[in-house]
Amino acid sequence: MKRRHILADTLLLLASMSLATAAIAQKSGGVLKRANDENPPSASIHEEGSNIVTTPFVPVFNNLVDFDPAKKLNRQNAIVPELATSWAWSADNKTLTFKLRRGVKWHDGKPFTSADVKCTWDAVTQKRDAGWRKSPRKAWFINLKEITVEGEDQVSFHLGRPQPSFLAFFAGGWSPVYPCHVDGRVMRQHPIGTGPFMVKSFEPGKMIRLVRNPNYWKPGRPYLDGIDMPIITSTSTRHLAFMSGETDIYTPSATLYKEVKTKLPDAICEVGLSYAYTQLVMNPAVPPFGDARVRRAMVLAIDRDAVVKTKGAGLDRIGGELMPPPEGEWGLSKAQLAPVPGYGPDLEKRREEARKLMREAGYGPDKPLNIVMSTRDAARYRDVTVMILDHLSQIYVKGTMKTIDSAIWSNMLYKHQYTVAIRSRGQAMDDPDVSFYESFFCKSPNNADGYCNNEVEAMIDRQSATTDPVERKRLVQEIDMKLQMDGVRPTITFAALPYCWRPWVKGYVPSMNNQFNNRRTENVWLDK
Image (cartoon, rainbow, N blue to C red):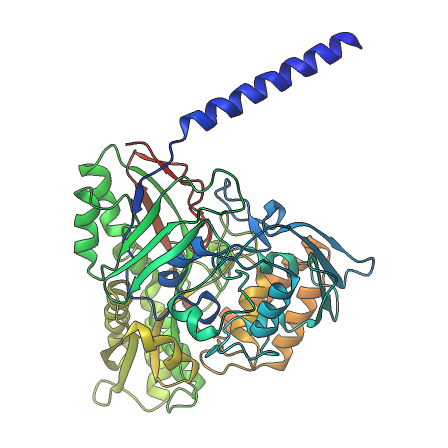
């Protein structure tokens, strides 16, 4: 017994020495520099839907829980505490209760309490008017019936039925806790959080500057004095900024990734999937896209392999609605998708079938279908749009591209103010409920083409309530396959996302299956 105690004491001492050494190695100070690709429409994460908002402003906030930031893959079995110290389900699996951390302060010095949690999700579900313009994630919480608080450090979410995914909704970049006492209009310009960094300035079109929160509730964090994020919309200028050392972290396009590795051999780069996938969206309310023959013909004409090779430099991947394996836990493999129209290997055979459908619908070489294809005014959108228009030209479609400013792009989709569009759809996490409820429920504001299928809604509810993970995956893949067979917003490719950083950036662990997560930056430090 005594020898066991000695061994345990020795191991404890060695562990303590290791932690102490690690702490000494980390340096405090310095300003991290990373470019933001576009001008954020606002700083309010709960009102927006793009990584141009989460990248600069996630460091301002905390969540109740988070995906373990030390792990490269965001998984539901790797959720760790943040503002919540613990959580527990009721016996009937319909009430989730969080115990909250005491002593946390908002950046303006006011205390964080359970009331802030309730206020945040009452606003998300639009039961409370917080001065927000919209709530894109409202559909996630269709099963949430009530939120109750007990004292300042406990909050409970009451569901209508069991829902295994529900805890994960609170992890990741799109689920920060907002202060109850700050109006939504303020949060759009100068957000107040509890996070490791505070907003020093937000100059639209120029620069976003964050500074260290000196009263952060995690002792010793963050290590950085601040983060400077110049807004650089030009792809080539962003590239040159990293190559010259003006920025420290960079997410190059797949086509520029090889140049980084060739010319900066000391740069550290890893390639993951961003959970941003390009889709062709057709508005069935605008003729002739109510005609199933036309929609199917356009699906058949797409050459996904060409998009992977050209736009994705061979790194992009082919999938359905959910991220394909191995990064994704739920999505369909390329082999499973082979029978789906538009995924088969014989491109010319597919296009001949598409031309036949177009002739049946009244179009042909002497009477092409003229379309205007809308897309967001960013290089990665424009490039794919040009390719897809070329593919469609092979089946009697004559199209022009219309670019839409990023600030109004999402609203245009919400209001269905387009005929045909190419969009890059970003999912908050690898979870079926997030995808299905946000994108395919009839009344969801993110249902970009008004798709409404009562049978599919029933299937979505059934998989959501299924507690057996094997059976749930079977149901999820059945839904995904049905959506792909029906040609509902056909997925073109899942975008590969190279993350590159200079060797002096330490403690940076990008997510390999989601571009919106692992953005807190509290563990990053500079060795220079």
